[in-house]
Image 1 (cartoon, rainbow, N blue to C red):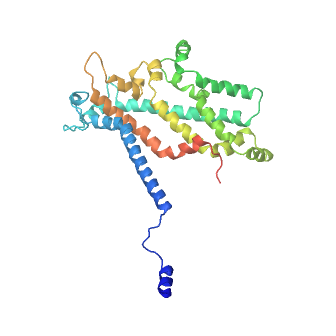
Image 2 (image 1 turned 45 degrees about the vertical axis):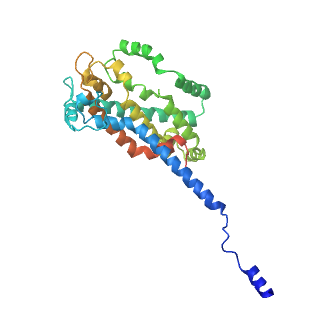
Image 3 (image 1 turned 90 degrees about the vertical axis):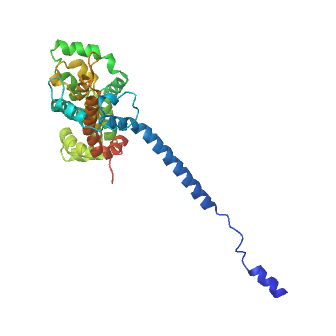
Length: 305
């Protein structure tokens, strides 16, 4: 009896289940992750639906766009809208509209990069009387709506004979009028070690050499982020060209799209949507090529080991 009792006590009870809190925690995390991805995919579908509808409608005939047919895809699949869009409108070719938009977008990028970087270096690295006051005044311009200065600016450019030219659309880019980009670069420069400037001055470098040889190479993420936003904003700008341009040969793509819609005659919505798809491609390609620099530029991390 004693031997049997001893064997019974020494034998482990393998049939009793053990509670494992880690397994329950892993299961809960998997459920939360699955729900998160389902919700994210649903929101993504809602956000991307307008773009999908635009692409699908570019292959539809005009009769099926905005009519009783609410289906996303059409059985009458055709490239006629793209052929009409590439032919241009008003005696102006689509290539000319694209060229005009490229001139404005590239000019805006070059002007913004040059003026904003120089202004940012002055605010971030050069100590001069009233620096904080001028910097605060520049930031205050972000609170000033563009619509407030439309009439005064138009009067000035009209008196100078610059209406119906690209000067009113580009001159502000070369004068650091976009305070947002100046502020972005100032914050980036302030995170760069001041010892770099001091070492360069010991070697006899001035502000020009420090700016071109030290600051600009280190500001690559901020410069690329500025280029992306400046290009997209200029490419999509409608109000500025609408105010200052009167000749169809000088119209950029946003104004050219408006030419396909005529309230007094028939409107070619199919060609307008097809040109919208074509106008979206340069922005999409530009963004995909440089999008990895956006986070680096906005986060202003400075040097990386």
